[in-house]
Amino acid sequence: MADELPPGTRHLPGFLDRAAQEALVEDIRAVAARAPLYAPVMPRTGRPMSVRMTNCGPLGWVTDRERGYRYQPTHPVTGAPWPPIPPRLLDLWAAVADHPAPPEACLVNFYEGSARMGLHQDRDEANLEAPVLSVSLGDACLFRVGGTSRGGPTMSFRLESGDVMLLEGPGRLRFHGVDLIHAGTSCLLKNGGRSRQPPRPLCQPCHCSGGLDRRTRGAGAGIIRSGDLPAGK
Ligand code: FE
Image 1 (cartoon, rainbow, N blue to C red):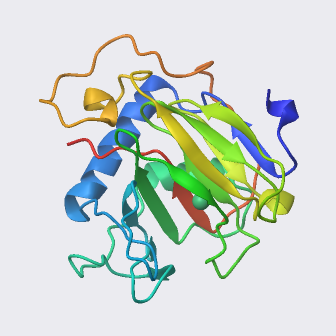
Image 2: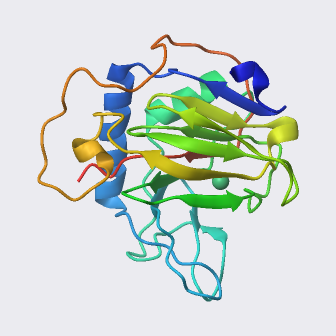
Image 3: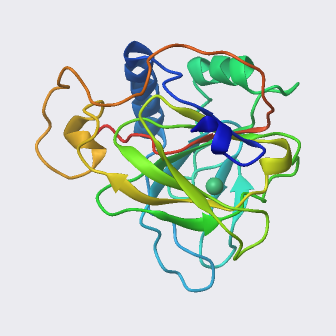
C-alpha cells in the first residue's frame, strides 16, 4: 500500500515492536503526569476539540478561543514549562527524520471514543523544512491525507499501533486528519485507550501492527508530532 501514497507521505508500518511501544507508552504517561491532558478549544467559536492534548519539548502546540493556534513554552492550564521530549522519541527522530536539528515540539493527541481530527494543514511551524513525524500507539485509526489545498482529492489508509508516518518535503503541507478510531484493535493501552472503564492489565497478544520489524531510513525534521498517543489513565 505504501507505494500508493502520495509524494512526501512516508508510512513505516510496524516500525516500533511491542516492547518499544510499551516503553514509549510509559514515557508518554510520564509526560502526561507532569503536563496533564486537556481539552483544547477552537479559535473564535470556542468549540472544544474531541481530541485531548498535551505536549513535551521546548515548545508545545496549543489553541484557545482568544489567541488561536500557536506554539508556546508553557502548559495553558498549569502554566508550567512542558516536560522534555523523551530520549526514546529523540532517538526515533534521529533514526527516521533526515533533518539536521532535533525536534522542538512534540504534540500528544489522545483520541478517546468517537474523537476525530478534521482535515487540516500543519502550518504553524516556523521551519517548514522540518517534517512532521507521527507515531501511533493504541487502537488503529483511519488516517486521511489530501493535497496542499483544501477541497482536493484525498485518500485514506489505516495506521496501526507502532506505525510511524511522516509528512515531509512535497508532502509537508498536505491536508490530513483522522476520520475514526477502530475501537478494540489494540490492547496496548488500558481499555484500548478509549473509554473510561476500570483499568485492566495489558492483555496478550495484541492485535496491533503489521510486521513488527524495525526499519530505519532517512527522512526530514523540526516537529515531532505524536499522533494517536495514550493517556494511560
Ligand atoms: Fe496535523
